[in-house]
Image (cartoon, rainbow, N blue to C red):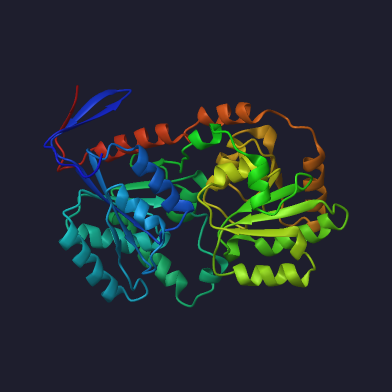
Length: 403
C-alpha cells in the first residue's frame, strides 16, 4: 500500500466502514529493532494494517542498525533513533527535534515501560493529542530494581504517566506491574501482542531443516526462543540440560536468539561438558518453521514475562510447553499442551517433567492446536482490527463517520 497519499481512506471492520478525512499518523516508541518482542509484533501490524489510512513511524533508543529496519522501511515506516535516555535533557531535545522534523503526529504509542512516563510528558508538551502507554513487562529487572534512586525514578515516571490518554497492557499482570492493581478503567484495556499465524499452516521440510541445524532425525529436541538476557534464565536451562542429558543422551537443546549474555551461556555449556548437546542458532526469521520442523518441546524457564508471545507461537506449532509459573495466565491458550512449574523446584525435577513430556504421546495434532490459537485475540487479524478501532476513538484531529 505504501505511504498514504489520498484525502480520504476507508477502514473496513465488523462494525462498518469508517471514512477518514486524512491518514492517521502514529509514532511508536520502542527500545530497539529486533526480530523478537515489540518489534516483531509491530512488523506484523504493519503488514496487516491499512497503510493508506494509518502512517506508522518508529522511534528507537539505540543507534545500532538491525537488518529488520529495511523491512520497516519497505512497509513505509521511518525508523528514527532518539538517543540519550539516561540524559533527560538531551533525550528531550532529540525527541522534540524528531517530532518537529517528521510530524505532526496524531498519536504517540509508547512501549518502554516506566520511561513511557517521560515520553508521554514530552508528547503532551509537543501537542500530540493521543498518548498511549502500553505495558509489556512484568516489572523492572532485578538489576534495575537495585539501582540507587530507582524508587524516586519510578515515582516521577508514575506521576508523568498521568499525561497518558490511554493505558494498555498485554496481560493483566503487565498492567498491574506498571499501573498498579486498580489500573483497569474506562481508558485502560488489555491489548495483547498477537501473531501472524499463517506461517504455522505452511508445510516444512523437517529433514532438511534439522540437517541445516546439525540435528539428526533421532534427536529429541528441546527448544527455547529468547534474547540472551538475565530475565530469560538461560543459566537455569543449562542446569536442567545437565540433569536431562545424564540419562537421555539423544536430547539436544536448540536455542534461538542473540543478546549480551550469549557468550556467557556458551561458556557455561562448554564448562558443563554439554557442547555436543547444544545448538546455538542465532536470530532467525523462520521461527514458525523451526518450531514445526526442528523442535519437539519448548522449555521456557523465564524469571518474568509481561506476556510471552513465543509461548503462543509454540502452541500454534503444536509443541508441548514446560514453562515457569510466573508466566501470565493469558498464554495458556491450548491447555493440554502447557505444563507450569515453579522456579523453586530443582533442575532435576524440571528435567524429570521434560523427560515425561518428551516421551508422552501427542495430545493433539498440530492443525488442531493451530485452530485453537486462531480462534483467540492472538490472531493478528483480530488484533489489528482492535488496534485500528483504538486509534480511531476520540482523536480530536480526526473527523470520522461510520457508514
